[in-house]
Length: 307
Image (cartoon, helix red, strand yellow):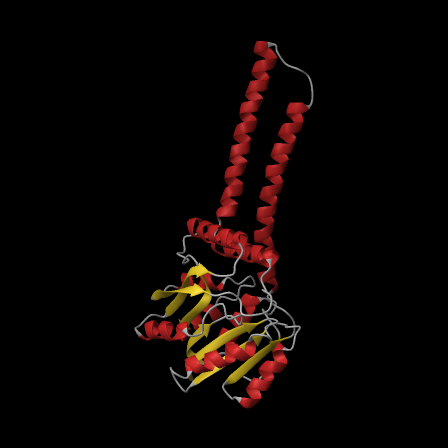
């Protein structure tokens, strides 16, 4: 059993691994000599895995999990949690936007009796205005439509106790949203604030398309508000259609003032049809997620590991 495990999901991070390893070693050695650095290679296409293997041959505290293909960031973190042996587990990305040195302050709060200590961003350097705005909107929308208190302006950079890890292992959902699952688990949770740095090198592994999918996973995993929206939209459209029907009858039989044509009919069909398609799309998202979980396929496939 280790005192602490550092879980690092890796996807094309060859330009960051050496510096990250050096900084993590410097930090964690101030905490304990019983630790492990668990690198989870999520189907990298560069030489990230070769670099990790080289480190593991030189340092027995370096562990690795090599996926057969790219399964996604959240799944990579989940694999690290599944196989790590630490009483405490730190989740940190490999791009060095989250400073490893903050682990010392987080671990101090962990030792004070908090099972979860997450890092809360005060600022985010190097991010576009669009990304900052969409992230801010997403977290606040998610907070307002879920019954779970998911902390605002936080990522996956955090320390969790082993008992939290055991809870997460009992939640094998295919569309993982770990920060929501950890918030759902409860226990004593606190935070430390920090300024998030720019990516040290390389390109982000989260383009807009992946960010959008991640947002959908978060909303559909922890809120049924979209389904309620579909129901409310159906009632609203039915009400509007009923009013238009009354108006049409009034114009036809009382005012005797009507123009035979297709304009109102086409507008009504397009409006109602659009709402129906939106509702079907929302329902389809939930059914798709149910289908993925019913298949019960493994969340990830390990190609090679030294654990």
